[in-house]
Amino acid sequence: MSATVSANTTENTAQENKIEAKYHTIGLEKVMDFELFKDAYQAYIATDGAKKPVLTIIDYNRPSTEDRFFVIDLEKEKLAFKTHVAHGVNSGGKTATEFSNTVSSRQTSLGVFLTNETYYGKHGYSLRLDGMSKGMNDKARERAIVIHAAEYATQDFINKHGYLGRSWGCPALSPEINKDVIDMIKGGSVIYASA
Image (tube, rainbow, N blue to C red; front, side, top):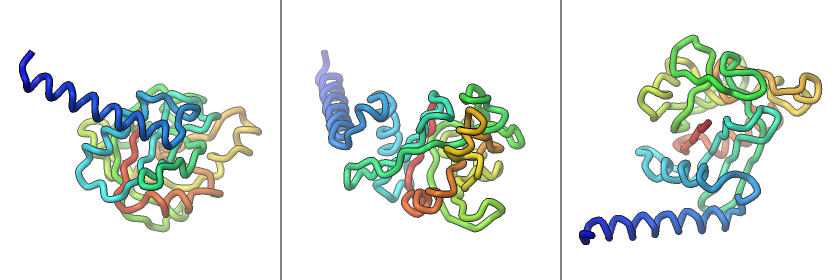
């Protein structure tokens, strides 16, 4: 084995050990799979323009009736928010199974996003997202994929209908926590959306 291969293997093992230690320090064992956190954390490290030590993970493998939107404060090493999040109306019913980067698809996009500026629109306080994954979500701005509040993204809606309502592709949150979440993640944090 060459010295370069050995050094890379040692470096990768050291990085994975660091990520695993962070996973346990934050206490994510009962919240999400380690592989999901590792993939998201590596995406956070690799994303140019990330300015904030905050990582949001959206696990679209879970049904909309479960918490699947997780905001992690990497500096304080704590889980700040754990909540429901809507997916696109054309992505599936209770669980999202179809994803798109196409304008007017009304489907959710996967990949790495960078949070940007806030604004007030038809859904109130909202947060613009920039898609960083070429071909997967890089049309997020053009598609107007933003984080916003929605009455259909609440536990009450789940109780009445058996699942969360659906958006036109946006990760919509409950009005109860929308502002607090946006204020924490706005201005250059990473969102990792996976399925």
